[in-house]
Image (tube, rainbow, N blue to C red; front, top):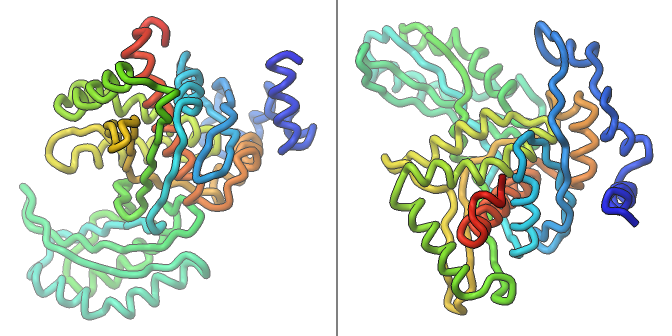
Length: 352
């Protein structure tokens, strides 16, 4: 059986014949359908869709769809998947919206009034959705070059959605009340993509027989290079995002939001740092860890309207947005491992 035939047979274990045909079709997304998704549609840009089978994550096997135009990325993910066993956990699924209030006569009094009305404001915001709920409302002073302002922040449990629409709607809903309480003007209200309460942590364990002594040492030294030098760290992280963003694009998620949040998180210490770290454990095995914010959805928006995205989610067999985030993170760490392994052994030319 050819490799293509074997892959098709594996796909048919999880998808219907019609769904496999849709994945392979050039016209899976029509111009008419695309015009309903976005404004001013002129045409379609086709991105290659690949798949990597055999990701072992938390004791489950995953077949992962990857949408990316860059040559070598699928191969790096495949190598990383074959080299390690992955485990992952994730935090709560909380997104934050920010309301900027300017021209406040008395900032401290304005903050006090907002916090005094927190309960009522939460009740008002929670009329937006029956399932996704605002859990808290905080407020702080921010001193800027144009003067002091109040930043009110709404914390929302977005469940299995990415959460942008519900968070933005909640922030807009309480805009008049915030202005009345503070005597200022709401200049803008929108979520932040630095979702530090929506984190994933992935660990990779490499059995000694898969990567032995010298190569493992070289990977550890490559990781130390990224830790010490931001010029290397940014390319190290780009390799991680190759895998993460390919999963997100395949499933109809917002790649730009996650990428922006990841790079902001990498800079929180004041110096740009790698999102992953590789070392040797007490048994002298190579181990890696990735930690990053990762906000994705399995319901709503493009996820539920793009025909290929819906099929790719079915292929993944994920049960929640949190699990999708863990898979995307594991693929990111696998991409990182595959690239580092190749760079310290065969060299960069083998990737191109």
